[in-house]
Image 1 (cartoon, each protein chain N blue to C red):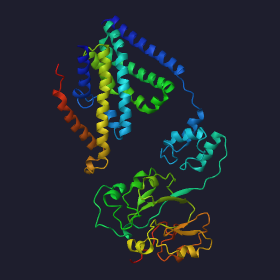
Image 2 (cartoon, rainbow over the protein chains, first blue to last red):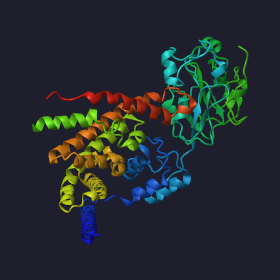
Image 3 (tube, rainbow over the protein chains, first blue to last red):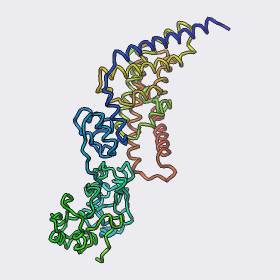
Image 4 (cartoon, chains in turn orange, purple):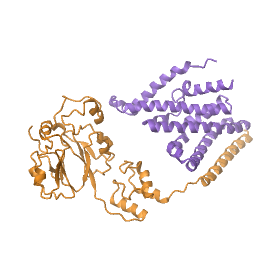
Length: 279
Length: 195
């Protein structure tokens, strides 16, 4: 046994690590970057899903923006009311309760719409399908293709393709991050208040006859809803009915008058599934 | 000739003895962060940076160990050096060059335990490289890593759209792809500079 060898080994390693330890300790003082302790507090309060719904790169970016005053304390649409008030307390401001909104797919066509081809064989991607099949394989140039770009974009498992082949939002799981809307090449996903009742699940802007022949679940722009609404909440622009939720009283007149049975109360059966009328 | 030796080393590190495909070093970050092109590039540049620095710093440490007849301690000592170095570089960048710090992001601390970095300093010793040769070997080895991970990431981005059999989905098909690419890189084994 060569004891000096062991001694050398222990000493060298010991001295090396001690030197590095000292260098790192000094460096951590010299190169210290002071960060606001509130940044970490805000970041730990945010949901941490990094969904990007706020428009900033991830929750860290959102926290930095809130701290810098560039974003309101309720910038995160995913955060619960409790979390928002917690952030407001950290920042020392008051927050007004924001109305909860959810995503809504303005289409109920799917297999109710005519198809240009027998079937579509290709990659399961809405953008790809639109490119190879000339604005999609549906007769309707506006409707949901049902290949699930929105489903893949959703980090909260809140949107699915329903039995008709149309994307449908699970309103209770939806956090209004609107990543689905950004992913949809048809731009038919918009947001509505969570409390909204009456919905128009269609985006077809074709004229009545064309819309009618293309899809059995299309708005034909007949304006019966607009004429009959007692509070003037429904307007038809570009052959498509739209509801102003600041005026709507959920009386259901539009749904009753709609000849296509398209306008429905979303709470009626929990699903946007208009009765299929014969073509 | 000094310059031709350096070129020889560079060519060897980038193509002939590519760290990923021929020496199979640094496979974990290669598989882990190659899903997207931009993260792969970020990782690649971080590796170049750290490999070059580690080669430079470990050279005097190795001289010290040789002097004390402690060559068998190289692995332990180098791990210590690399870990301390990465920590130091991270602190330095955070303070002095925040833009570079943000660009390298999470990849810098990840490299602390990268076997390619330890591999490059051990190979420097094995091949008896002098200081300049060591640094060149480190930087070009990192370039080889960058080349490999960028090529692989571009393939993997396309693999996302492919429909392999269920049992091959995800990592299995990626591993097979990496194996095929390694086979391709074996084609460089006969390459040499004609002087």
